[in-house]
Amino acid sequence: AVGDDTPARPTRSSNTNTMDIDSSVVMVSEHGQKLDTIYYGQKRSNCGSIIHAGDDLTGNDKKGVYDNEEIKINLTTIPSNVKSLKFIANVYQGQSRGHDFGQVKGAYIRVLQTSNRDELIRYNLSEDYNGMRGIIVGELYRHNNEWKFRVIGQGTPSDSLTELVQVVIN
Image (cartoon, helix red, strand yellow):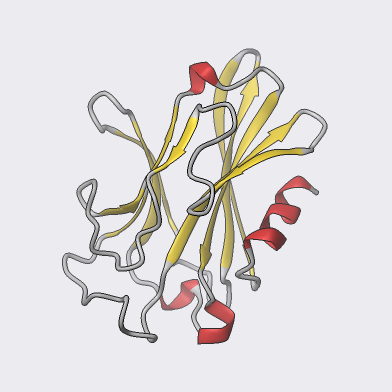
């Protein structure tokens, strides 16, 4: 889930000075090949184990407490050829609009337990990301038949999802 701790914000859809932060997941094979990318333009993985709830352009679609975009993952149904899931956040059209994560206050990515929405992992996106429009946030990876999470936190000046996917598979 991608969210914002700010209790109330004006609607962004009519204001070009506001930001649209997108979340994505890249499924990667053990050989480092991209198997699938799940984002607002492809809301379901080919295997059906990952579902993107949709693009929230306004920041006002509070599906969780203050979550804006949600990606649901069923780890038990992810095919065995998938070695890792790479999580990306990017500022949509950040370069052309002059926006970056350093301007965002209170943005985060978190992992929740589906059954009770307990927070398992939380990662703040706004700290130390001045000039960065894309962040490789972290990855879930298989280790001894268990899923583990590793924070990556690699910022990039690019806001292009295509370029960010290339970074995670290289």
